[in-house]
Amino acid sequence: MAGTFEILTAGTDTFQFRLTAADGTVVAVSPRFHSLKAVVAGINAVRENAATGFVVDRRNLGAG
Image 1 (cartoon, rainbow, N blue to C red):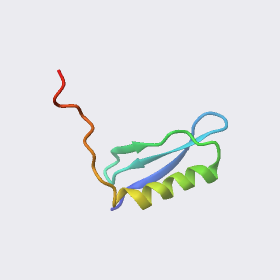
Image 2: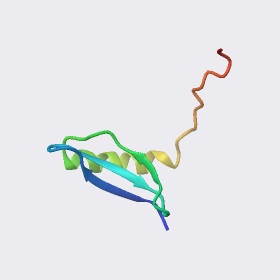
Image 3: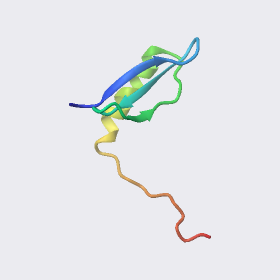
Image 4: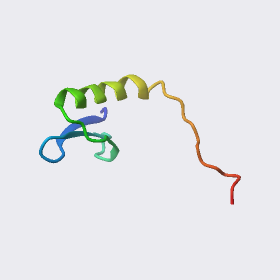
């Protein structure tokens, strides 16, 4: 079973989405959006970019 995008209200005038895995684990939580149209666009952007995105390790392992 695939993950699920859940659209949530976040305050009185904002929305966010949450991506959950098939087992119910929360994988990602979005920032707040000011319209339903914007939150749907955010979901579509994640769908389009996640599968082809590069993993970039930004830890500074040499410091310290």
